[in-house]
Length: 194
Image (cartoon, rainbow, N blue to C red):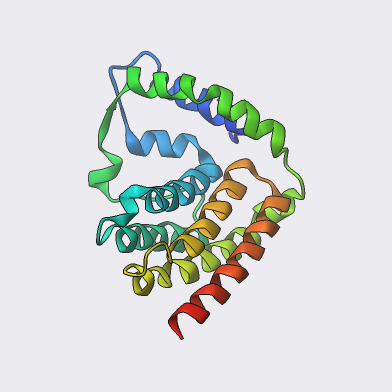
């Protein structure tokens, strides 16, 4: 296995390599296989869950915001990949399901790699990741007060999802778009709360 994945399809191939030939694979082992791209999917998934109908359940938005703070805080600290508590990292997943999911996502990964092809890559590394992590924490902190206003938390969560996608596909232009969306979300939150 190479030390760093270069595309979303590489991530899926790496997942299949890690899971192949085993009955089960640990969640922590899968996440470590993503390398520095582990922040992308983990900052993308919680906002998507919150924006879905599941986000209408009381407490879900705040729980997703807390998860984002945990993940983004590690980005600020400069960790190579995301650390999870042992109970989560040691959770076993059926390898056959993991491989099947990776195969099912292959066509979407091909599209993502074609649309976002590593423009301005310096904006998806080093201090830019730390700044994005700080922006995600700021946006996540705005979510709990908005939880009981219908659809109000969609603005900050949408901006966080863009940061996650930018980090996943290593696209600096998308990262700039995420910062723009974050500024808009902060303005929306300020006008809603004040």
